[in-house]
Length: 336
Image 1 (cartoon, rainbow, N blue to C red):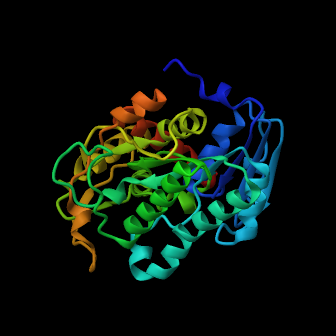
Image 2: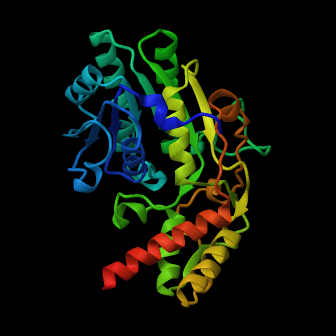
């Protein structure tokens, strides 16, 4: 890759919503290494000292709720670039409480657009979307032109949020791009409680301890796993690349891996690193799981390469090794 993402942020003021979350904490750490003039880390809880130090000129923590308009008034007033990573990320939570998912996903975007219109500022907005917007698909790999047919409230709400941003971008209210993320995995500074909501991270922590890895069904369904460092680089490039307003872009590895193979690789690499051996054990699907969970998904990432110059660098095996060593270190340190 010819571009240095860190160099693209010289003199900018950058805000990250959801800065204490899995993706937000990792992106905040990545932004610390850029030449941004100031960072504004927005979260409903204190992001902690670990995210408040770095080579950036200045870092401010803002405790606020993105479901409230006043929060966005402050963000839009201050920031040139906004990475919006706050909101519901759980399919099961969206099914059990669709109204809360709607308020968490769509309401913040309506407040953002209202704040931008009132301030007459059009910040670059990079929205952390999801490949879940596609729903069941007939052909792989899935490109951005594939008809979106989300099968869950989470997917429907996220697609609606994307469309709000695209329409507002065409009207000049904001300059927004949405990144449709595959299955992100890898270590994050957010802390294990948040990180373990990620399935591969959770399985890796089990394997490092020598515990069984529960596998729903036969595990032959495929996922597109993308390492978190590659995702952070995609965010940084999308935040500073001109000419992307109104677009939705896939960010994934472009390679399919069955969940069974992923779990077995985690068990193998964890045993190699720790000497503890885990067993992958098939278990019944929980009641109420959608058929989407058993479907295959692989993304076409060629458009992200063409538009932003991004390609994933970390192979799945290398990513698993990095995750295993990170979690093994955390577990050892916690036990010392």
